[in-house]
Amino acid sequence: LAIDGRVKDAIGLAGGTVMDADTSILNLAEILKDGQKLYIPLKDEKVEFPLISEDENLKTLKAVKSGIKFPININTATEMELESLPGVGEVRAKDIIEYRNRNGGFKSKSEIMNVKGIGDGTYEKIKDLIYI
Image 1 (spheres, rainbow, N blue to C red):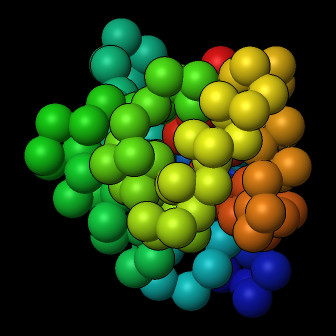
Image 2: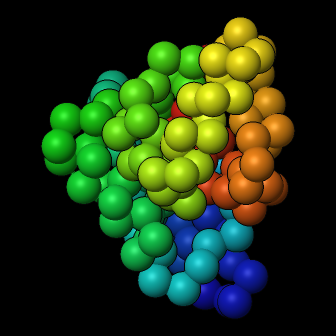
Image 3: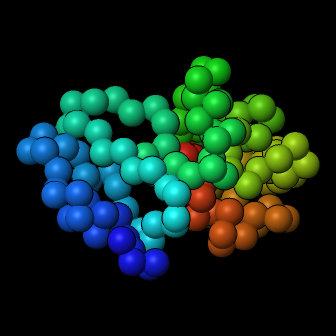
C-alpha cells in the first residue's frame, strides 16, 4: 500500500470484500497510516469498537473491553468515557464537560472543536466514536 493509501485501496489490494460485508460505515477515502488495522463488519453485525485502529487507539480498544460502548454521546458522557477517546486525556475530558455544562450541551458533533485543545486532528480521530 502506498504511503498515502486509502481504505478503498487497502480493500482492493486485499482482494475486495465478501458479498455481505458492510463498507457503508467506513470512510473509504480515509488515508491509512502505517500499522493501522482495518476491520470490515458484515451487514448484520453490530459493531461496538473502532473499525480502524492503531497504537494510538489502544486505550479506546481497552475501553471497549471494559464495557464502554461506542459511539458515545458527548452530551451525557462521563469523564471516564470521554477519556477513552483518542487524543482526550483527563484534562481535556474535564474541559469537554465544562464546555458542555456552560453552553447547554453540544448542538453538533463538530462543535466539540470549540473546546480548547480539540482541533481538526483530534476531531478526525474521534468523529466516528461520538454522537449527540
